[in-house]
Image (cartoon, rainbow, N blue to C red; front, side, top):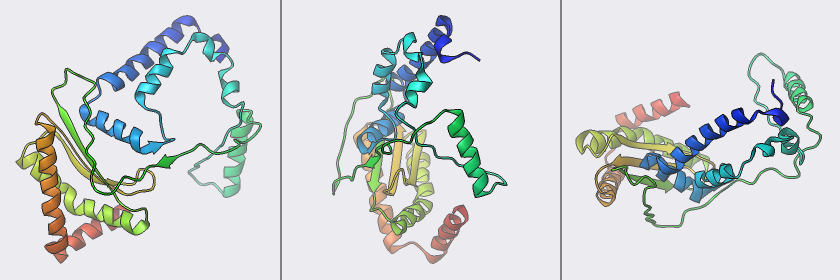
Length: 245
C-alpha cells in the first residue's frame, strides 16, 4: 500500500490526466441533454454536488504536494458517519461495525453541523431558460421540461401515477410517430423533496419546435387524464405502480 505522503510523481500524473480528461469531457463534450440536466440541477439544488466547471477549475489548481497528510486534513474538523448495513445483523451489530469504522479512520469528533442541502421552489407560471451548448461541433439540441409539484406524499404518488399513465404515450408519439430524436423520455422523480414531472428530448430539430410538440402533448394528454381516462386503464396503471412500490 502506498501512503498519501509517498505517491510517486508518475502515478500522480497518470491519475491527474485521467481525471482531467473526464472533467473536460463533462464540461465541453457532454451530450446536450446531459448539459441541460446538469445546468438545471446547478440552478435548483445546493449541497448535493458542485457544478462541473467549478470542479474543473479546482482540479487545475491541485499540486502533488496537496496530497500530503490528506486523510488527516479531511477529518481534522470532524466527520459525520452514516451506515447502511445489510444482512443478518442486529441493531447492536450495526453499532459495533460503525464503531470499528470510526476507530479505523481515527475520527475524534463529530461535525459541528451537517452539510447544507437545499432545493429551490420554482416560480409560478412558466420560465424559459435558453443556453448555448458547450460543444459547438454537436449538431443536436436538447429540450428539458420540469414541472415541480408541492411537497407531500399524496402529490408524490399522483406524480408517479401520472408517469405510469403518460410516459409510454409520450415516447410513442414524440419518438415513434414524430421521430423527434433518439432520446425521448417522460418520467416522475423526487430528487430531494419536491415531486417532479420531467420530459426531455435530444434532437436535431430546432428547440422551439420541439418545445411546442412537448407543450401540445401535455395540453392534450392532461385533458385526456382529466376527462377521458378509462377505469380499466387507470386500474392497470395503479396496479403497476403498487407492484413497483
